[in-house]
Image (cartoon, rainbow, N blue to C red):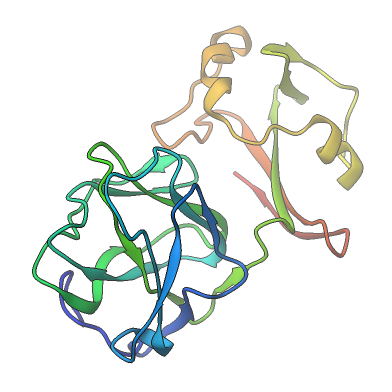
Length: 233
């Protein structure tokens, strides 16, 4: 098994690699360029050529799976404070500032719930440049269209379904929500729900999942307009 900071020229057994030029990866902010060199995976590397970089520079994508690896180059002008945020949870920052080397495994997370996740990479504080060469995802997962999937949440407690609408608890008349009703009433995330928990006499754990009650979640493929999956916890 490869360790963080080691060169990883090919995905290991159990992993599938996706190149930086994959159309499902979205690069935001100004300054992104593509460099071509056989030292990079598939010969291409997304990077920002000069310092400092804009605060809105990110690389963003969605993937289905449980495990993720980030492959990048390191350079003496690169950031010491690169972060990955998955589904709103920011992981500890890491440095890509070192003597020039390529196709390095710089970040890894395993054991996620098998569902659609959104990942965002960003230089957090020092606004120094960085690069994006590839990602590895567990072979049972896949990189997905960033615009095709949307996850909506409804809360069921005491046999009533409720949601947040304009920062206020709302109890729509729902029993078995349809896809259209999830689209209409569902919450994109659960962060704002924590402030309203006391009103329905239930508690949430640190992961944002109800201890007493159920989080009902549907992941919808908007391109095909069908339910991709449903989770009840």
